[in-house]
Image 1 (cartoon, helix red, strand yellow):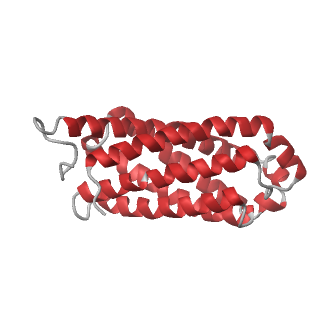
Image 2: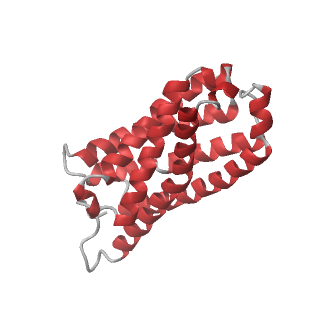
Image 3: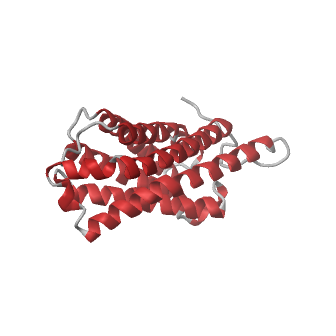
Length: 226
């Protein structure tokens, strides 16, 4: 599959919009459903807003897959961004699958949290590899790079939470919420995922689309030229 700059830009913006929608749904979940869910101890129960948020994140990750393909294609051979592109694609694919299983609760939440943690660590590493190097300014604006770094740290934070919490997410959800470290990892990670990721995706998508429109006169973003 070949993804050019314009396609990647459009998918990036679409992913950002879906992630913003997921953030709105998440706020409603925490206000309406989360307190009773944690108090009941049955976190494997399907809830309207909780499962909707999980499903929207799955869609947002899936929409970022063409972005990973594009970055892997335009990166210099054997350079960090190209290698990270394929690693990110794998993480996005795994994350999509495991967020769907979370939304449907076909796998217990404790096991699923570990699987999601692995996928999110891969996505976080991908975002950091794309945005931290000095050469990232070729593909991303300064604002997008900062948002991408925050988003990458957010995905790593959620992955760290999953690694520490593990099956305890199912066995003792109330106990997990009494740990300041776990609350900080989950809270900061969740906030960063829902806020920094869409900013990065939308800014990146707009930059790529603008560069593609001006490619007839100027050199486009990226080595391949889209």
